Image 1: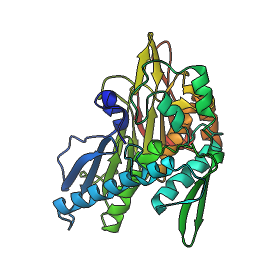
Image 2: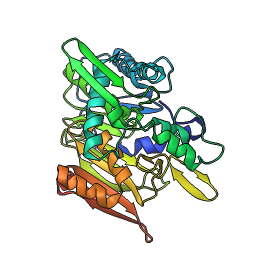
Image 3: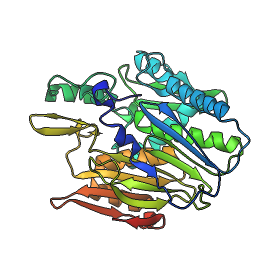
Length: 347
């Protein structure tokens, strides 16, 4: 699920907002690192301590797992399960894998909680603005085009059906287009975490793009720590550091994946309520949650809402959230009480 080709190299950083904090003390435990590419970004698996798994075999299993995820939910693969559903012009229920059903279930719940700010049916608008599988528009969409695309958007048009026989999704609009890329990284990170647990690996830090999941301790025998990047073009500018304590974390940002037209910047984050890229000053939303999928879903919805609404909703929902807002003087950060318990240091 890569970005449009012209942006792919320029915006890798958006999906690497959180990076493992290095410790300068001598390594006391073996550290195995496996890295690769998936979903238009990078994945990383760090395992501390001795394990019985063969590195080559483990990487093959990791790659196969993420490849299957792409075959299920990628909108960049014409024959993926999701692409076939989007191409289908009927309204009968269509079978889907259990993992895909899990993503949609979380997306629907967060979509309702954010009053539609996080909407996996926003694909027609994402494509219209040039941030989907198609290239960026030669010219900005007209209001008529935006209004037309909005008629094809809405979570209420998508139904998830689940029983003992399996899972299905159903649309009541033939042109409904579902895009799960905003949750794909979190889903991928959870898949890697589940693989580690199945293999009895107790100490790991896994990531797909900007979504990270962890358990246990690092090579120095202390809990895994990650850094939240300052929202600038400097790759290694740290805003804050957190101790994950076995939780997952994801960051969504508006400051790297964009295009400019007439001197104005247009973010890849689309507000379903307006059909246009967000215009407020919230530039980064970080969420810590029990699963990377949860964190990945919430960070997108909060980014759409903007600082004040996002903070109010995060407090109402009891979420661990860290928001960075651009000001005339620089950047301002706010967090919920739940996030403070994970915080190690902040700029």
